[in-house]
Amino acid sequence: MAEETKKEKRERKEKKKQLKEKKEEAAEESKKEEVKNDSPAPEDKAASDELEIDLSAGVPLSKKQQRLLKKGKLNVEKLAKKHPTPKRADEEETPKSSKSPFGVWIGNLSFDTTRDDLVRFIVGKSQTFGNDLVKIAEEDISRVNLPKKNGKIKGFAYVDLPSQKHVDSVVLLSEANLNGRNLLIKNSTSFEGRPEGDGQKALSKNPPLRILFVGNLSFDTAESDLEEHFRHCGDIVKIRMATFEDSGKCKGFAFIDFKDEEGPTTALKSKLAKKLINRPLRLEYGEDRSKRTPNRVREQVQEGEIKEAAPVERQERPAFRERTEEAPRPKKRTFNDTPVPGKRLKSSVALASAQRASAAIVPSQGKKTTFD
Image 1 (spheres, rainbow, N blue to C red):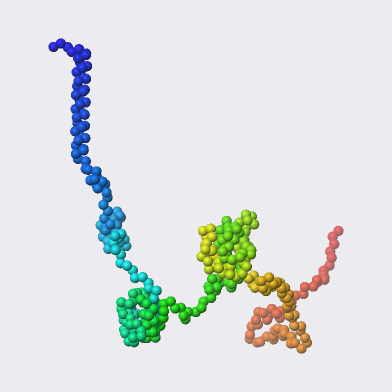
Image 2 (cartoon, one colour):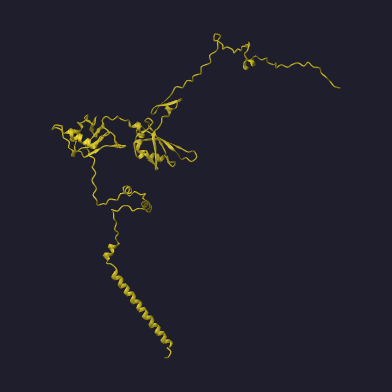
């Protein structure tokens, strides 16, 4: 067999390469057709992409809760009460009973009174009324509110009724007896019998004055901020703001002088004046310094009228009483020098009666000796 030339050898390799490429292309086309046949329709694909969420399912347990559940240290019922399952939006909620504009207030109730007791009392007593008054039925009572504290009622209740005629009928039951107590019944909108509180005393501990004290201010507060903040309260005469000597910034408090007492009163009642620069303010009536100072020279009598007060007289201290001859002199202390036989003298008596040495200069009685 003759040896193949280089040209034939090259042609053979090229043919082999072309066959290999054709096989690979045919394999790729077959794979694409299989993928097309296996792939779902666009509608099915969109449906498969949607996530299904079960709203009735509870909150899944964490890994720590799962470990506690295995050890028996986790109560699933308590956990379900603490984290209840969310309600669906399409679920119809039971409508809550709305408050009626017509109602009565019932006081002096016994602490063991229940809703059923009140309903039976009102329905039963109203049946004795004549034709002029409306008889109350159980369906007419739409709501019974018994405020409680520490598991016991507070001694009063609110009962809602459908009309004013029903209210008038129930009010006539006042002073009737229930559970051993005479009830007090009146219209829920009536506030008769309450003490008339002075609103100005509750606003501030100081008496009403045209000066307003503003505390808890920010150090960046300026007088213009205070003027703009309290402008709606009344006419401002003067603003006295305490400042630091070195920086000139606010010390945290100020006094605002209004034209009359209505300005500070409006500021104390207004909710808009309670906060400035994100800080809650402490507002009070200013203090009258003239009444606080005891030795005052000038006092303010009325607005714009000032008079001088009388100078305070100085009271001299009483002089000591001079002794007179008639006044008895105090007795001197004496010691009994006579010793009692058989009894030892006290040390104080012995020292008092002892002879004292003389402190005078004693003259010399010797002879002078000289040496040559």
